[in-house]
Length: 243
Image (tube, rainbow, N blue to C red; front, side, top):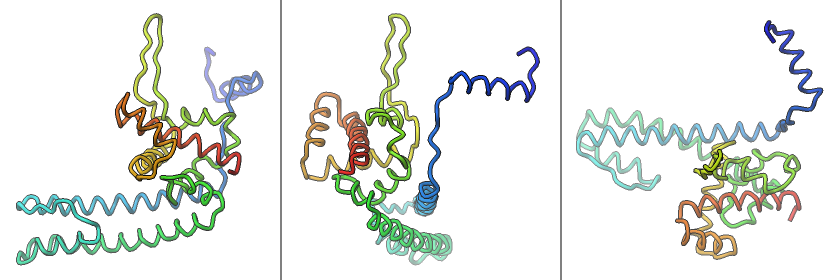
């Protein structure tokens, strides 16, 4: 319109709705939003803990002290061993270790809460019957999908979560690129982790056999992405059929 006002914008939106030129958007339930809040808090604490650990590694590396690969349980002990006898390094590392200790304690409590919730939830217990799907993947899946019926087909799950290739076609040009990475990044990461666990679990099944066949043709990374998409599709079908 030549003259743009809020009133005319509202009129235009109303006309589009009247003509049916819109797509409905699923609004997540309150329980799904609450679970997403808990998962976001866990992720924030996890990232803060990792950031503290990396900062300690950087401080020690400046003095030629390398920690190397270290289990979480021995991290603090290893730092104390490297800083022993140097008062300045001890003064720099001890506050970070104290903050990390408090964050680890909070993270342990939150993870126990989430695992207990997954064990008591019927849907999560059903999803965890699939190899590679643990408590956190099941909780992320349930919170992200919420209502499985808003998908007209399970095949629509792949594009929705961003695990299908991009495609650009114009004239004689037809380019198939990387995955679109649309949708929830945390959800996509959880499915990729579940696919990685399934491939290396040592318990063969028809899905992992299919993924290894894809890996021989296209490479392991693409096979893991393809397996993540198929895991999501199968989980959605399980959720709809309650099987």
